[in-house]
Amino acid sequence: MEELGANAGAAIEAADSAMKTTTGKVQAQAKHIAPKRTGFMANNILVEPVKKTATSVTGTVDAKADYSSFVEFGTYKMAAEPFIRPAVSAAQSFFIKTTMDNLKEAAAFK
Image (cartoon, rainbow, N blue to C red; front, side, top):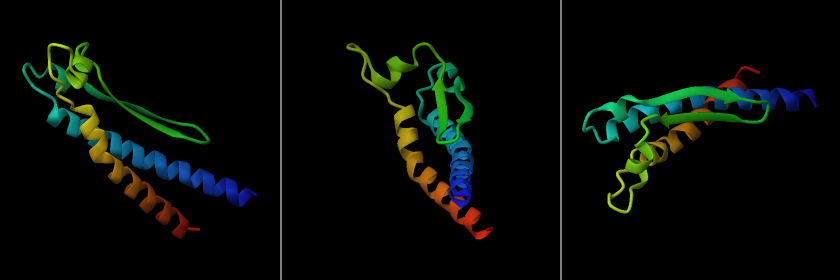
């Protein structure tokens, strides 16, 4: 039973490390994609600290400009110009691969 707990802990640590790297990649990609009329919106795409519990890891990249959601999703008068969703989609496979690599590395040290 202790081994199961240790494996779960290793999995959470692997995901935590991968999430920290991935949220940085999402932030960089979103800043690159975001429309830049003034640059305010792109400059206010921020990464919040990764939250880790015993069973989950959560990473958040937040566009802090008040109008970010209107740009991301559009309005009835303005077409959407997504920048967060494409950045997240592009980073999903990176997160999975990095987590798996971290798990393999952790298993090799046992």
